[in-house]
Image (cartoon, rainbow, N blue to C red; front, top):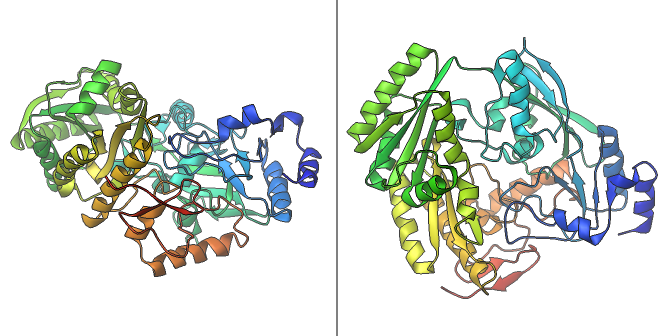
Length: 483
C-alpha cells in the first residue's frame, strides 16, 4: 500500500479507523460464502459521510480500488476484496436518523441492521417488510447493494420496492441523491439502478426506506406433503387461485429434518416436503384466506395442514425456516448456497434434476425455496478440506444455474452475482448485453474504482462450459477436471 496514501488517510482518520495488521485484516478477507477470499491492503472504518467523501477522493487520486463492505453476510463473494484494495466498512454508520410516521418512512445509515429498523418502527405500529433470513445480522446497506428479499417478499416486494431514496458518494467523491420522498420523480430512474448494483457504482451513505402498517392479524399454515412434486404443484395452485400469501416457503424432507433437529419448530419430519403459507391483514380477511389456502393445499395432496394457534407458534414456524442455513451448517463442514429463480411450475422438475445431480457429483443437496416467486436456495453440502471438492461443488452449482436459465429463469434472485456467478453471467446474457452492463459501470465509475472484477465478466471471452472455469481471484482461467 502506498505510504503517501496511508499518510493522507491518517491526517483525518483516527488510529482505530485504520486497520493494517494482518491478523485483524483476516476478518475481512471473505464474506458469508466459503471458498472465495482476497487480501486487502487495509480496512477503513469511516464514521461519517464526510469521512467517505475524503476516502474516495484519496483512493481516486492513487487509483486504489475500494470494496464497500456491510456486515459481511453476503453469499456470492460480492464483498470479497480484490488483493491490495481498500475495504471500506460501513459498520460504524449504524444510526437511525429519522422516523416519519406520517410519511411512513425512515432515514437510516447503511450499517443499521435490518431487524433494528422494524424494532424501531414498531414504536409507531409500523414495520419494514424485506426480511432476509440473516436479518438479525445483515445491514441495510448490504440489502440495498444486493436487492435482498426474504420470506415475505412475495406480497411486499424486494428491497427495491421498499426504498424511496439513496444518498451515495460517486467515484470522484461527490455526494449524489437518487430518488425522492414521493411516488415519482423527473428524469431517469437511477434509484432502481443503484439498488442491486453490488457496490460497483457508488458508496451508499444514507437510505430512506418505506415503512408499512403492522397487520392486525397473521396466521401461518404448515402443510405436509408425501411427494415433493405435489408441494410444488400446490404452490402454483395457490397463486392461480388469485391468492397472494404474505409468505409461501417450501422445504424438502432433508431440510425439514435438519431444521427440526436444530430449532424444534414442530415440523413434520415424516413429510417429503412442507409448505409454510402465511396470511396477514384484518382478522376476518386472514381467516377467510387461510380457509381458502387449506382447501387448495388439500386439493393438491397435502396430507396435513396445521394452522398456527397463536403468535408464538407462528413465530416458531418461521424461526425454523429462517434458521435453515445454520441448521445445514450442522450437517457438513461446509455448504454452498445457490440462488437462482425459475417459473413456479418448474419447481418439481428442478428438484428431480437436483436429485440426479446429487448422484452424479456424489454430493448431498438439501433445498429451501422462496416458492411463491420461484427463488431457489439449494444448499450443497461438501468438505473444503478434501482436495477438489470445492471445485466439484462449484460445478454442481453452475449446472443448477444453467438449468434455471434453460427453464426460463435467472441466475440470481437476491444474493447477487459477485464472484460466484461470473461464469453463469455468460450463460444468461449475450456479449452485447454484457457490454451494455460494462458501459453503465463506466458511466458511473470511469476508473473502475468500486468493487472491480465483480458481476460483469471482464475477460475477452467467457467460460467454455464444461472445460474451463473462472479462477477464484477472477484474473485467469484454469482447467478443472470433468466429473
